[in-house]
Amino acid sequence: PATTSVMVRPSPTATINGTTAVCMNSTTPNITFTNPQTLPITITYNINAGAQSTINVDANTSATLSVSTTAAGTFNYNLVSVAYQTGPTCQNAVSGTATVTVNPLPAATLTSSDADNVFCSGTSITFTAGGGTDYNFLVGGVTVQDGPSATYTTTSLTNGQIVSAIVTSSNGCLASSTQIQNIVNPLPGFIINPSPACSTDLTSYSFGVTVVGSGTVTSTYGTVINTGGNNWTITGIPS
Image 1 (spheres, rainbow, N blue to C red):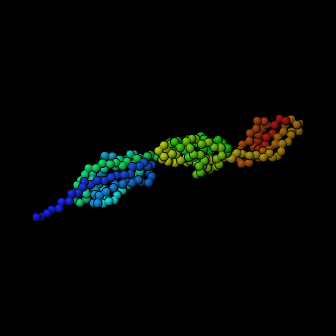
Image 2 (image 1 turned 30 degrees about the horizontal axis):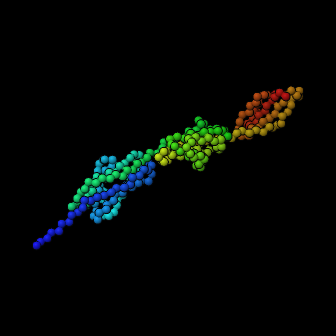
Image 3 (image 1 turned 120 degrees about the horizontal axis):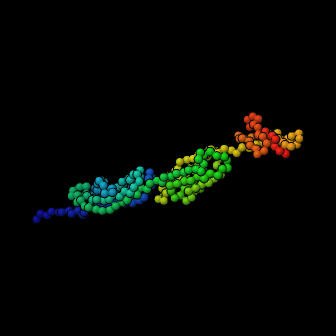
């Protein structure tokens, strides 16, 4: 008698993995589709229940799909169905979800207590950052304070130094603030020259002042006269 062999294929299956959370503009994560069968399959899936897409996966292996991180949001990769690539395809509805959460970067801000960022050496300046939960303050690119405090106060800035902040959000994402360059003017110094000299009636005295750097001489007593450049005299100071 004649005989006929019938091969019954099992319904194809597939799994999906890759749930993760990342920051915007970070390295792209991968969604992994796995085929446990000995035949190649085609997997149909969607993103956030949108339009369907397919991906082919060879026998007993996996295929990956990279996920863009240029936009913040939650992206659910959902399995829809799976079929063999050769007939009979035995299409089978399947389920499974891998979720990629792309967290936004913090909106980092930085302001200074000095409106124009021009001040004298030794002035106390407070910088205030915003937009996160942790603030790494840097002066000249070197960390000077890191922690939950959003303010950094200093009296030791030198001319031209740049202050910035790296802001961390509650989800661990980082962003850099704008940079603030500081113009720090030196404190003026002076030299007494010539030395104090008394008036002939000994009722007053006068002396000369040479300013080191730049500055203006004032006095609560006597008369101040600029004799040229950085040279000044104070006359008529009561004895």
